[in-house]
Image (cartoon, rainbow, N blue to C red; front, top):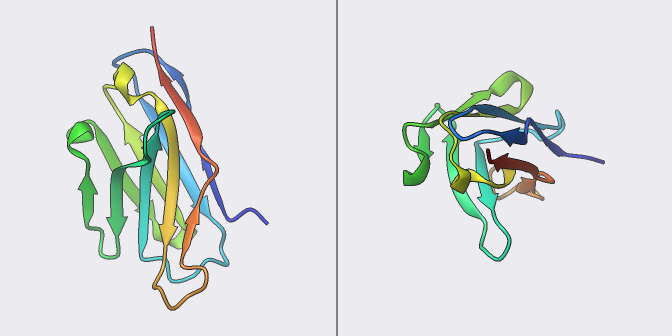
Length: 119
């Protein structure tokens, strides 16, 4: 049973834009944290942006001013609007969904979506 599904990746030229989407299954209740991470081969998975209950957001320094995270709470969906993309943004982007730790499981990952920025 697929729990978290990302979409929206692809190939884009430098300076271009992409919008990633991540939908969590409706049976995942009480989500209080949704985030995007990215990973390139040989490196650790790195936080890109997060949004928590109440709408508070946080961004990695390398995307501030270019990326925007937003959430559709009613539909268990989180978005990442990526503008002014750079070649160094090329990575597999993963969605991470969490809920309070007394739930089992409390954390879910998507399968990842490839973003390639190249001319």
